[in-house]
Image (cartoon, rainbow, N blue to C red; front, side, top):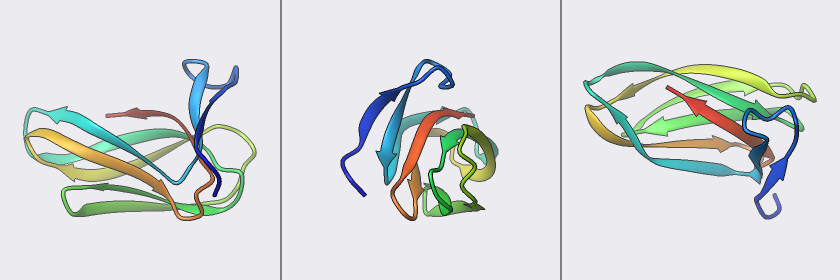
Length: 102
């Protein structure tokens, strides 16, 4: 993969996304109590890959095909009460990440 950069496009929720990223870290994901949470990711995948979500030594994965458009992926991941670091990664390093919703 090349160097990650910010890309602008009308189909992005805020008009911008992290492009060409192998991984993106969200260091301050706060939840009030321990539990399994549904996390939604807005991604564009130029080619088939596995999207991996990790936090606190737990992970969830989705094998996705290239679809040439933004797509929402939904994964369930255990989080601990308080602040968590959630990492989104792509096996081939070509993911565009628009958003993470908890």
